[in-house]
Image (tube, rainbow, N blue to C red; front, side, top):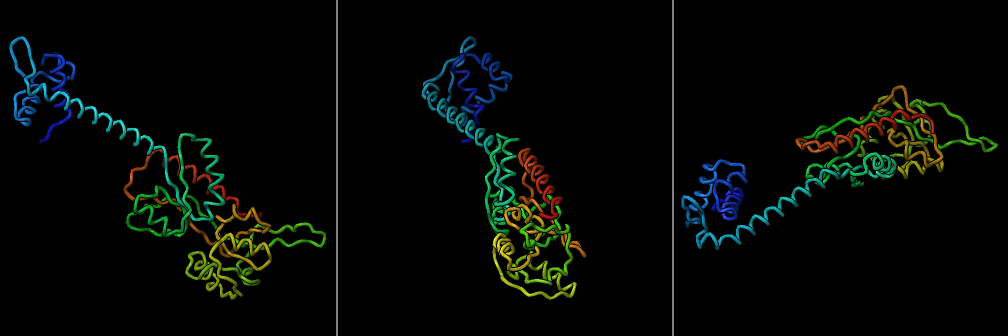
Length: 309
């Protein structure tokens, strides 16, 4: 049986009003269209539902018996569509945003506070995951947006550039004999990396691969210590005087918690693109557009602040 809600509504309207004309007016259809709907409905039910005369319309016994069921079906349908509308509205007001632990800990808390004040009706769920988990979550639809560098073009994944960061040298802040902090210029040459012990990430880490490739291109050799998995651990080790680190400038918000110097590495400047990623083909909501614009502003501010700290 292939009964439509319009047929059920037409049946109830005629039953309640006792008139095809008034029922057609109530439903905003022609009387001929209403008659066709009810004729098809009777065919599917397999019985006549109305006794018609030139002056009145009355339910048959079968029609009377059908009234409670039709009312229940329409009520269930109204509840279901109401819930769907509510859930759809709620879904449009929340988004899951994933980032690597460093970004989730050092950038997103303050950004989320500011975004929440500007957009109080939008709920942002933060997930701290590694790059592969972010991509897997985007592909499965569990994550709406992901943040990170080194995301290569991939089938099913859409990338949008948020900002471009230079590589920076993170070093301990030397003290003068009087205990005053020294002033250091805003840039450092890559040769400075070779002048001290280099605290490194694992060899297969994209950041470390980039650093190693640059050192090879400049024919620079350096003593290496590591490899540490966590960038924040590397920054803490730098602060304690255990070596230097070459890292992307998006670490600047994390570095402000430590007594270190951050200098842009030059000769050459090595740019790193930072992206927001989403599932390709997924419709961009107004919420996602606002969120991406806000994130772009936040990360471009960080990119512009990669000087001495």
